[in-house]
Image 1: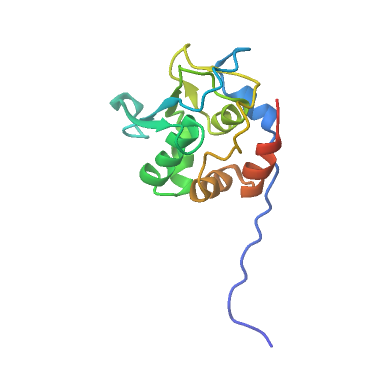
Image 2 (image 1 turned 90 degrees about the vertical axis):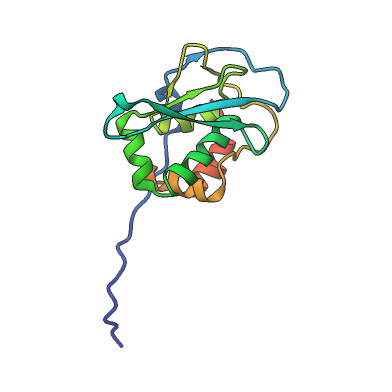
Length: 170
C-alpha cells in the first residue's frame, strides 16, 4: 500500500569538535578556576539590528540560579529574542553580533566551547576562559528548548550538546 504523503528528508547530523569550538572562543585563557562558589553573573550583548550592527546592542543578564551564568543568558536570548528558532540564531551567529561579559569568574571549558561554537566574542579583555569544568554541577545550563535550537544550528544532536559536552574536558 502506497501513501501519497511526501517522505521527510533525512538530515544527517555530525558530532561537534568541542576542542575546536573552545579554541574559537577568543577570550584569553587563564589557569584561574574561580572561587568555587556557585554565584556568578554574565551579560550577553546582542545587536539591536542583526543586519546593521552600527545600531548598537541590547543586554540580557544571566545568573547562576539555573546553570552557568553565560548559559542562563544564552537560554533567555534563544527563547525570547530568537523565538526558539535556529535560523534566527544563525543570523546572529554568522553576523558576529553576539558578545559575552563574565568578569567575576572565567568561563568554564564547556561554556567556552558553546560560546565558541556560536561565534561569541568576549565583550572585553576582562572576560577570560579556563580549561577547568567549574565544579561538580551537572553541566547543562541550556534548557531543552534552547539546547534543541543550538543543536539545529550546529547540525548535531541534543545528546552531543548535553551528554557528550557534559563529559568533555579540555
